[in-house]
Length: 159
Image (cartoon, rainbow, N blue to C red; front, top):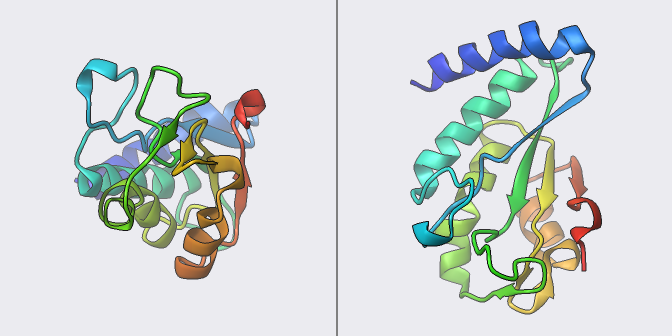
């Protein structure tokens, strides 16, 4: 199924995106949800399935050329951005196990398996530290996963 999604996204990328000379594509693919009552645009609650879809979208959008991308995919929102009430000023608080086994899985798969070189930090804080200034951006994604791309904030939402 992953190859079919990659092919479909690649075709859409070539036909729709390159015709308009777009440089990057944003997609809200990595929104894990644990409370469906608060959901606006989540992908699902299964981190592996969401990660598998992220890998397919990243590969499909960027293409298979090792030197040139069709377009750059930007995964968003890293991390635990699933609360809708007060998201801009709230803190998602959880332990290391939930971080490594749930919330970070789709992003890790997008970076390591998909080759993503860009992601957007979430609005919320994680354990009291705003995601835009969270040390795990460097410690986890760069040091553990080998990420060497672009990390951006979501417009004026960084607090």
